[in-house]
Length: 428
Image 1 (cartoon, rainbow, N blue to C red):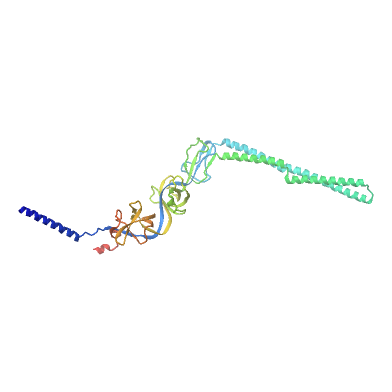
Image 2: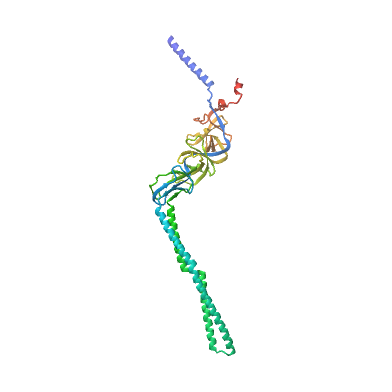
C-alpha cells in the first residue's frame, strides 16, 4: 500500500515539473539569431575597362632574305647578332658567269647605240639635203617657165606670136609647177618623219640591246644579297662554299628596336578597346611591366577562334624583349562614366546559376538580389542592373547567407598600422 502511494506521488510530481518547464519556455522564448556582416554602398563612378590577355612577342619588322638564283656562297659579310642597315651588302654568291654575260651584253648595247646614232644623225641629213636641192631646182625651172609664158603672152596679144607657141608655153608652165610641188612634198615628208623605217629599225635594235643588258645586270645583282630593312641578323644557316638555293632563306633580319605583342581577345572585350589606348606588358624575368600602346584592333574576327586580334607596340631600346616570348598584357579600354559599381567581393553565384548580391534591407535583413555585371577595374565591378546608387551590399559574411537572414552591421576591421594617430595614447 505504501509502495503504491509512493508511485502515485512520483507521477504527480513529474507531471507538475513538466508543466512548469513548458510554462517557463513559453515565457522565456529565445531571440532570433543575428549574423555579423560588413557592408559597402553602391556607388556611381567612372570605370576604365581593363582587359588581361596572354600574347606572343613579334619583331617590328622581319625579312627572311631568299636569293633569286642558285649559286654557291662566295662569302658572308655578317654573322648572327650583327647590326645591319637597309641596303647593306650581307653576302655574295659566285657570279663569274653572270659577270661575263653582263660584259657581253654591254658590248652589244654599245654597238646598237652607235648604229642608232649613225642612222638618225648621219643618214637622214644627206637625204634631206638631196631632197632640198631637187626642190630648189624644180622651183627655178618653174620660175623660168613662168617668165617665158608671160613674154609669149605679151607677143601673142600683140599678134606677133602664133597660138600654138602660147599653148606650148602653157603646157611647160603646168609641168614645171607639178614638178615643183612634187619635190616640195617629198622634202616636207622627210622633214616631218625623217628616214622612218631605218630609224625604227635602228631604234628597235638599240632598245632590245638595252633590255638585254639590263637583264644581265639584274642577274648579276642577284648574286649580291642585301637587306631591305634595319635590324639584327637572327639566322644564317649556311657557311661560305655551301649552295644557296633559290627561294630558300639565306639570312633572317629582324628589327627589334620595337616589339609587337599579338593577342586574341573575346569580341565583347575587344569592343571596348581602340587604337592608341594604353597597355602594359608583363614579361617573365623583368621586374617592371613595359609600357606600350594599342596599335591595331582587327576589324574582323579570327574564323578559327572567333576572337579579335589586338596588337600592342612597345619600345625595346635595351633589347630585353625577345620575339617569341609569351607575355601577359593589361589593356586599358574605354571609360564608362556614371556607372554603378560595387566591390567585386560582394558579387557571388546564385543557387540557380545567376549572379546575385546580398542587399541590406530597411528591415535589417539580407535580401538576395539578382544582378547583371559588366566590366571590372581593380576591385570594383560594374553592375548593369538590379541595384541603385546608395543601396548597401553585404561584403564579409555574405557567402552562404540564407535569404532574409537577420544581420548586424559591424565596422570594417582596421589594421594596426592604419589606426589614426593618437589612438594608442587615448587608450592609455
